[in-house]
Length: 258
Image 1 (cartoon, rainbow, N blue to C red):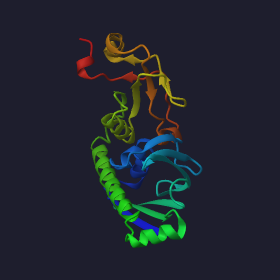
Image 2 (cartoon, rainbow, N blue to C red; image 1 turned 90 degrees about the horizontal axis):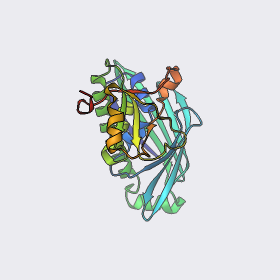
Image 3 (cartoon, helix red, strand yellow; image 1 turned 45 degrees about the vertical axis):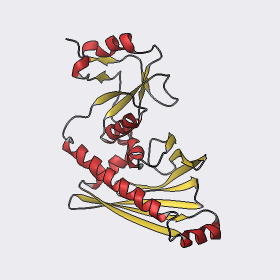
Image 4 (cartoon, one colour; image 1 turned 30 degrees about the horizontal axis):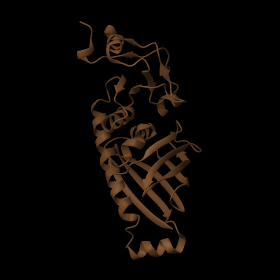
């Protein structure tokens, strides 16, 4: 069994940092840009028993990774284990230790490379480069993303959270923008050219300031366009925040009715 450890210091308290991880967008924000992963399904919690399923390319084929959460003690600890994937075993513990308003995020990974003794031999011959170098690069990228996102969000922590509608959300920039806004605690909806996916909330009675949505949609939006809720924020669901009625969108100035 191999061990890997990485530490990240975040200029925020443990509760805020843990809340960032609880948002659905955290997975996309933590995934390095060179790791082309496709999220298949994710439960709305980090609690024990919840799962996240994603696919990623490995040569000419796509591998499926199923991660199941096995530990949950907010705001200081959560863990997950691989129940299906490329490794023989994979366990990932996340510790959040706060001291003086600064939180140290400690990632501890224990794993076993595939192919048993043959895989161990290959890993030793390559000096651990088979997995360890990739892990080091991945967690360094995660560290930078987490620290920068938390720093940006803290600048607006006293401002009210917004309901935000995003068009072009499936592209490279749109995907990251949606994830970033979601981890900031905003209520994000996608404008999609299809029926909303199963399990996603939708809205057909959208109220807007200046009726810009209705006017612009008549001119340029296909009749099949719909609005899809990105996610119920996990902390919002747990704290029982009331959500009712159709969203009232704040329009960009160029769309506001004069």
